[in-house]
Length: 433
Image (cartoon, rainbow, N blue to C red; front, side, top):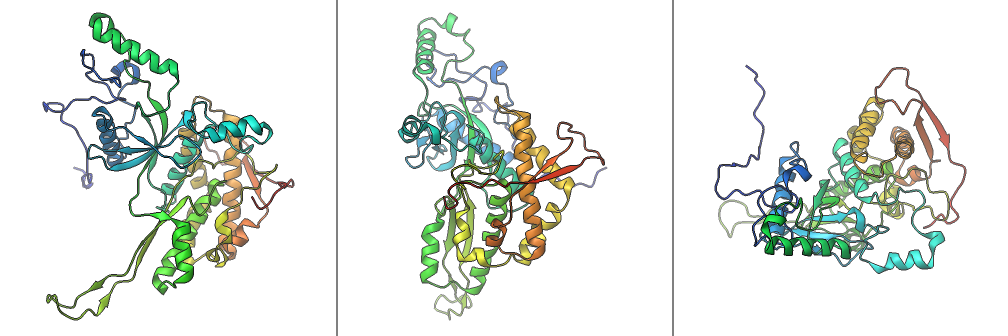
């Protein structure tokens, strides 16, 4: 018999329970009664049991199930007012925020973006519309891809993010979809025999990225200003430096074109005193150091298919921080250098991203090949900078390079695979923005 340890946690719903009903906007189940809600469940053969199914991550799957159940009960996602796209706070049945959902068609340049700023941008400045180095409307894949890279390198700074499907009346739908949903619901109510033949009664589910919500965090800019005025304890400052280096590694590998101090977060927990002994009035001689952690959110503008070479350079804004002038620590070298120096690991990372990106309807293999060429070049520069003991600010000053696999069209790995390097000689017009 196998001596392998049992799994830590397994979420297995019991279908024999009377109160267990698979009723959610993106799962199969009941919903053909006359009093079915507008956001009725879909039949199994249309969306199947594969949507929002994450057997390798049961905790994430359980969170998605709680979000679906909350939507079924009328606890709908709430649109976030900040930002230039349609993004939503998703809640559970207790009305606590559990995640942020960003639909693909409501991205900054999506056809159903509810924010008027990008519409004005497209109308008034069509020549400067969008970022020419990025694939349009793939921000949701970029969000999930950043989380994938984070997990592969064990950086643990990106909240778990995956591609899911959700439907809610608070999402931005066009008039036709809403009219269809109302008409089908009306027919179902008045003529159930006809309504039962509909594949779907409610609004269609939207594909997008779902990122777990983190509590107790604030914009990095808020805490960095405080840290400038108040010195941190040595141990806390060292931990912040190590976490900052993880952020640098992530952003540089995925070539994040939108990392400001307002879209990465810091959680700072002040020092606490512990009394000596069991007596409440004892001596308070043991003081714990403040704890600090970071979260890298808003990763939707990454994975370019070429380095910025037109109007804007999209620099890393953390390069102006004092932490960027400190050479990379041994801690970050030991964490990522053995993996990044292994071409097999790098190719495995590219293969995992391929499996993620190919799910998009507009997926183009040639464009993806270019995206991976940019990422390999970034990894090459990062590896060399770590070996040479450079600092983050010196890293971003290195010449950008693209590394393309000679036989990229073939998924099977062979010893004969070769890679070609090419340097970019064209620079953007504005280097500071």
